[in-house]
Image (cartoon, rainbow, N blue to C red; front, side, top):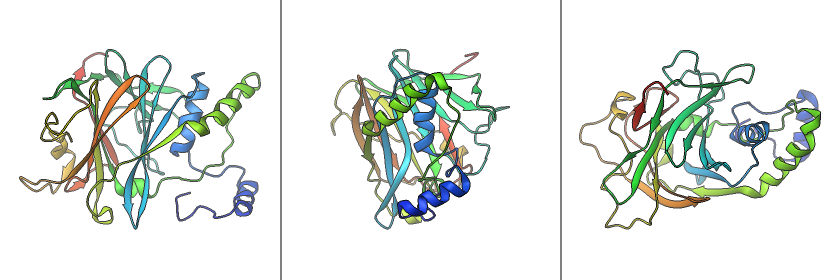
Length: 276
């Protein structure tokens, strides 16, 4: 259920759950993160919920960031509620999450088939430096605003849990409630007039200043192939924020680029590593 469809009181929510057994889409951010982390036996740490404006003084998540105990940064993008192909790779329809391995800063994409089996894209990538002190591009993410505004915000779903692992998973999911940290990106511009939003995520070990920031942090070198009607020599404002998850210092630049995004969402990665 998206924001407009979601029930406004507990009685209505309970009625829907009784009638349908489960309420909510598998694409929901609020379901995917704790489900996958507990399924793989990974304790849930801090969960950064990245939100952007959607118009009328509202804001919605564009994705979530987590850091595992073995120092892997995982980004969970907002997904469309309907099935769609967004990566031009055989056998991969929808990327469930993107993982950055530290300290190598190697990046790979994970999807899931209908049985829940993980599918890893055969190619992987690695971060690339930009012109700034110790600033490395991890990836760029673009998504249509319609996907952001229509995402599932209300989830009440049953999913199979092995009986011998029920107590641990229940405790982990209950504990995760206090680990959600909301991080707003006040992107400038009228969100109601925008076709899509985008951001670039960087790793940095020091605080950047106005003097050390590059002239443009939103990586758009290949975006013209993914976007139609991109005007020549156009400039658009961005917002830049810095924060830390665990031991990793991160810098994020976001904005509303021009034109129209061809797919519902897409990723850009800096350097390809052939043959995994």
